[in-house]
Every structure is written in structure tokens, then in C-alpha cells.
Length: 175
Image 1: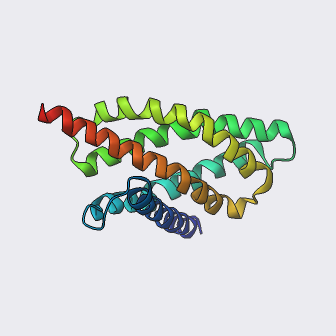
Image 2 (image 1 turned 135 degrees about the vertical axis):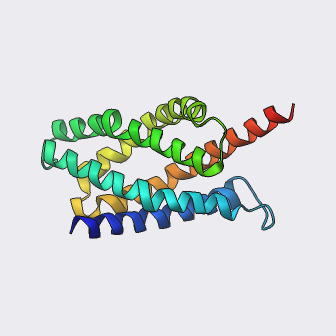
């Protein structure tokens, strides 16, 4: 049963992360058909399938077990704070580590050290709001799809940030 849930969560996240990166490349960054990077999109697909979906399924299941149903503002606040402080940072480390590895980054630790604090700071604005909605209004069975949809917006930001850091790194090497 848990394996089936993890596979479903991975499929949902993989699909949404794929679409988020495609949208980021085509509409935010204005890439043309020739400039579009299929490899970049596939990296986000892999992260969604293997990391994001299963990780947050387990993370939110743990929060539900720890705090129970969100029956009060206090429980919602506790779940939101715990998600932000306990669940989110390890995910960012794993995300930027995986991206660095798949991109062939020469110094993955440096990529993590540079990207995680920026992403965590931005996430402290975005995710508490998304998680208050998540824990207050979304039933447990729909949390991963809701999270994946919210993550579509968030992942557009991460995709853009990740590609910008890669651009800066390439420019610095060319000097």
C-alpha cells in the first residue's frame, strides 16, 4: 500500500515538476524551441518521481502522526512550523545535491552551500502560506496533489534559480 502511494506521489510530482520546468523555460526565460533544454526538464522529472513526491508523502504522513488532524489554529501553526524547519531543509539539500550530480557540477557541496540558503529564505515566505491552506483545508488524501500544484509555482522559481546559478558558474569559468 505504501509503495503504491509513493509511486502515485512520485508520478504526480514528476508530472507537475516537468510542466513547471517547461513553463519556466518557455514563458519565464523566453527560450525558443531551439534553446529549450530537454535534459534540464528530464532532470526535474527525475527529481519529482524519485525525490519530491515520495519525500513529502513521508514527511506529511509523519506530521499527521505527530500532530493529528488540523482541528485548531494551534495544530495548523505547529504543523506549518515543523514542516518549514524540519521537513523542508533536508529536501533542499537533497534537491540541489541531486541537481548538481545530474548536471555534472564540479563542486556539489558548493552548489548546496550557495543555493540552499537562498531557496530556504524564499521558501519561508511561500511555504508557510501554502501549508496553512494545506493543513487547514486539504484532506490528507489530496495533500500530495495540492502540494504538487503549489510546488509547480515554487518549482518554477527553483528551476529559474538553479539555471541562473549554472549560468553564473559558466560565466565565471569563462573568465
